[in-house]
Image: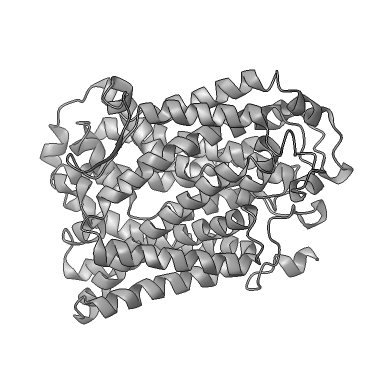
Length: 497
């Protein structure tokens, strides 16, 4: 199919997970800037910033440094992993077949799909709160069960429209909607800054350096790490000739700029409103700080920012579902995804008693296998010279990525070992009395300070780097010749420079 047909704004993208041919590659690295800017102008950054002050005891200057390191650093990693997309032309979890094997890849793919569903449910629930509050502020319409369901359907319908149309429409909307909702956010931010208790801010005690280290990890885990396994999905249409460093910079600055502003503002607001860090409904918590005339632009900005984030997540979830082996069109995969998200939204709003608690618990549990995948995939990306497009789509014994029994055991062992160790340091709970899971090392310094994800990532990378040297099937695959049109001549080290 011609590039003009498959990449025209407003038309349905018909490509699924199959690699994009070189003839259909186009665009510039700055597309990644707008992709991640759009994904991160949602108000969920405010509670993260508030947590740095309320839970970690940092002052505003320390919180700002933590926000910069955590946001820019984690999305630099997202940008680095997205190099695989422009190199292989396929979504991240499809490319992962070359690392884990066509069967072994099922585990990481399933975890990724569940992760995306969770983020979508959080976005959908928060957006419904925003829309309910907007109807109340603008028209005096009070919240009820029927209206709640309608608000969920409105947000899901908007998401389905954008995600269903596909890549070209998403890229176009990300850029222009970022201007609109970014401007609205700036207006709200300027007003909120006038409500800050500056006396408390400037007289706040300096927190320990250890809390800053933990804070960087918390911000990274709550922002870029959650997107690390999707970056390639949006870079796969970019030409191979684009330097990898530009993707890293575009991703880091695209996400880092709005995140640092929002996280820093959340830190400022926490000086006068510590409860913001643990609000069961963060939209309403912030809305109470605003006069009625400011509530409407704030709620519109909140709704729009969450929509921009959600349509990216749903698009990736559809591709991930197809990679799992569900043989449906990409548009139908997107549709199935939002049905599950709608059910999750109903649960969170109408059944669950706590919103933020399950959110943190969800992040804590899924961070372990996701970070293990990141560690393995990153090492492979550094060492790999090319992807075989035909083999990525061949899930049979004839595939170059069959390895041994369909599994690349070096990658699977490293992934599984890192998950086990990561869980040792993990405690997942919604409250002190509602503990879902607690590892034996969860209350060690590493575990209690939320750094288990760092151990998981580094261990996965180290174990895989060692084991792949002794895995004959991996060496055989590395020495094979991929089809000419799928080979990237430049070595990984040169591309990353």
